[in-house]
Each structure stands twice: as C-alpha cells, then as structure tokens.
Image (cartoon, rainbow, N blue to C red; front, side, top):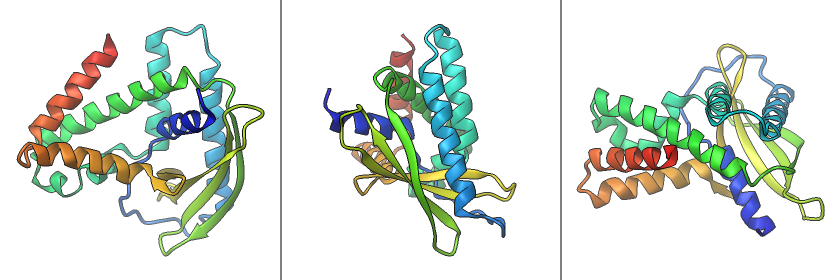
Length: 209
C-alpha cells in the first residue's frame, strides 16, 4: 500500500463533519486544543495496538472515542445540510444512529491497516471570531515516508472541553466531501431522504457480517 493511500486512510479515521455554532469559553487557547488533539491521537494509536480484544469490545472503544471527540447531532445536521430541515424527526433520529454506526465501523476497518503510524502535533493557531483552533499534525505512515501535514479544526465548547469540527487533508475538507456525497444520493432519488437511509442501513448491515 502506498504512503498516499495510507494517509487517506488516516483521514478517514478522524472524519469530522460538524460545523454547528457554539458559544466558546473566554479562556480557550491553542495550547488546550493542541493537547486535546495529541491526547486523542495517542488514544487512537493505543487502541490500534489492542490485538486481544473482541470485535465487540473494539467497536465499543471506537464508539466511545467518537462520542467524546465529536458532536454527533451537529455532525448529522451538517452532513444533511438543507435536507436536515425538511427531514422528519424520525428520519433525523434514524440518520444520526445509522451514520454514527457506519462511521465507527469504517474506523475499525481502516484501523487494521494503520498500525505503526507516527502521529505528532507540530503547532496550533487560533483563527476567526469563533475561536477555532487549527492544530497541525505530521502523520508518517512509515518511518521512511515523508510526513503529511493534516489540519484538525478544533472548536472550544461551553464546558471548557473541545470538539474537532473538521479535518483538512491536502486542503480538502472531509466534512464537505461527505456532505456532497450524501446530497448526491438524495438528489438522484428526487430529493427524498429515505433512499439515503436505506443505503446507510444496507452498508451498516454489510459491515456487521
């Protein structure tokens, strides 16, 4: 596998798709966001090294990381875009549940090829009125490979914690990419959301096998 494809696999690992508006704590700082990303990366790589746990235990571990690191409701709203507003409450709830399970499943699949990846935080810069922090990491898929620089956009939360709201690999937003893919499915089906839910359900069931 090439280093380029391994870097894209790592991008899939930390897919971030929430761009909701939150009030931010006055004391938010690049240092806190930088530590948050480093700790999350260390936790993920530690999970990668667990070879003796069951598949269910691995799923629960990755789901816990996802829930702590990302704001799932905002993720769903951003990915559906304008279609979130026309979806029923039942469709919204089904989408959030299916989307979260699909993402965690995808992480587990991608993780199997990412053991040994080097992950290093190299800097952080606060930008914009929302106090978002761009945390830059150097990701090296193999010891001899040239590191790729990946920006993690972190937004401080009201509880003084942090959530990653976007990941930019080679200048491409992972959140916007996923949003466009889902919108394409909905548009091909006459603007109906149910066909997307069916597709997600099929994907989730396939990954369970």
